Image (tube, rainbow, N blue to C red; front, side):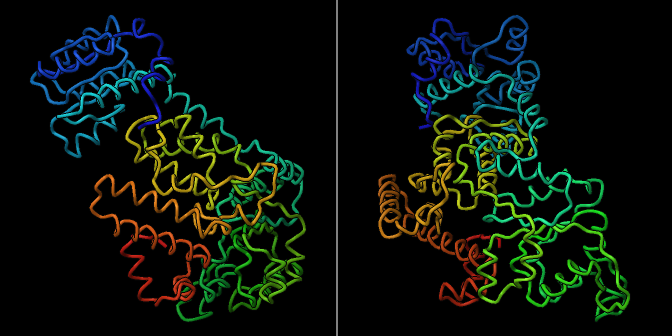
Length: 506
């Protein structure tokens, strides 16, 4: 169930006769007796305690393989015991038991570093399986919190060992002494702003400001003022002089993200700045000299935009002095394990919790995913697993179901260029497979849910289908709801209602 069998745990932990005992702490003699019998059948050594104080005294002389403790006991509290144990034995797996399965107890257990939370009454076979997992985790984990902290501290600016990423690193290195304009291309979520930061940091302008602006996120009427600033009284609501992004970036770098979506008339003003070296605030009459390096980025094919009359060809030539193409994550699948470990550690650090680890099986499954959202999608997945995974070792069945459905999507070799058949339109569904594979996956999922006596099979699957289609439309239209509704053939009121019902944050 968790990608970790009894045989695996014992083979890694060593022979059970050489194991340290499992300690059981519970004031209920019947619970201790049941667990003792179960562990005896497995030939696992064990020792029982009726209160936390005896455990703390025993810990001064020896330590167990795994500690299993009740929460509420007349002569002590399991959560307090957990805190003491983690302070003195941070790598000791602790399983918390309770007959009061309230939210506060569960949250407190995991915040305190518990390996798992077991509610009474429990299935004894599942409890033994959980103990086996905890034994394996205790043997395999070596100071995880310290390792994670050191790993984060020494982590490079951009992670990547794949050949395609090494080319990006070389380009950044070659440009380290240059102030030339750079155009970064690549799919959404590949890390274009991260590369822009690296270019700035390793340039002669490193001591100057780095100012970023997503030109697709600013309404057309406000973008000109955002870029160039405005004089007081230039338009209704302009109560004071405002410095634009060009002035804010003076002496440094201005990063213009999603440049392909910039309105055509503003492209003319940007071109004038790049060619003449000066600009005017909105409503202003005095030219302002610009001393700014431009780094632009886009996920779009600018040559195609030029052919469609949506992008100025002369501006493209001004921006395209040096072009750096960032590979999609499917083109650098070898980097997924290192990226996943980094994101798991950074998510844990941001949440103030112990870092979780992906099992070998889960890491293998993730490495085979296509990740249409690229590195950003992988980062979000790692954050989700850090929050939602029930144990410190994330198994295959701890992964989101919709991600498992896309597990059969092939990943392009790190050295090969992506083809149309490997660029997914909807997660896990490629253009050449839309008529067969996704329907088979859907059928298998429906059968499983029906076999599990799920009472909301139709509504659940329908909601997931609608959510996938809506998110695909929003990705294609860059979050524009009205355009997404038009492309889907539904009304704007319908898409607004669906986004609220399905809790999709545009």
